Structures are given as C-alpha cells and as structure tokens.
Image (cartoon, rainbow, N blue to C red):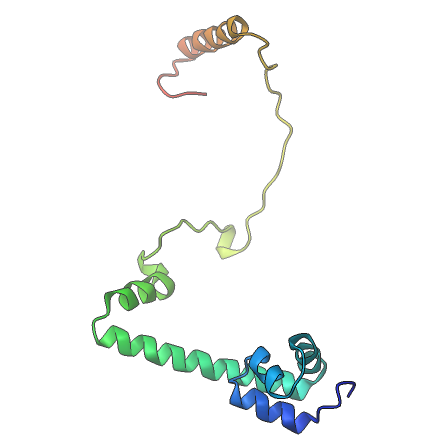
Length: 143
C-alpha cells in the first residue's frame, strides 16, 4: 500500500476507534483522507467499518431505550418522531407518489399577465380580476 502502514495496524486502529476514521488515522499516523482511501479500496476494511458502525448504532439504540424506560421525555419524543410516523408522530408532511414511490412532477409554462408598470395599471388589472370573480362566483382569498 502507498502509505506503508500495514493493514493489520489499520484494523487494530479501526477497532479501537469504533470504526471512526479520523481517530483511527491519527493512531497510525495517516491523514484522514488517506485512511478513507485505504478503507474504500479494501473490501475487508470497508466491511469492518460497516460492522463497527452497526455495532455503534446498536449501542446507541440500547442507550435510547434505557432513557425511554427511565421516563426521559426527550428520548420518548425523539423515538416517536423517528419510529412512529405511521401512528401520526411527525412534525412535517411527507409527500409520496402512488404506492409510496417518488412523486412525478410535470412542469408547464403558464401565461402570466404582464407586470403592471404603475399602481394605476395594477388597480385596473385587479379590478378586472374582481369582476371575473363576481361573474364566476368566486369569493374570498387572493389569486
């Protein structure tokens, strides 16, 4: 390998850092970018980092569940917002297409009225809209 650091030392450093590249790189005197290249170019190292990250997620989930069991309201709310969306615990609206797939958006050109050059012209345009609204029975709101 170009860096000269044996893979066995990189494996040891990755295990000690929990799969976090920057401290592992520092432990073997590599730059973070070199460590990243070494990991991405080695299926063995990539698999190790993926495994370690999964273990970290498992630990974090366990700690979260402990906090929920202790009655920590922030942990309860976080869990519900991220894991119980199907029960209505969401803060934002999620839009999807048919069967949960991506939405298809079609863009069309729209004829817009010309921009008024003066306040008087704006009034004329809006008074015409008001008359059309009366004719078609549209009430309230803006355009």
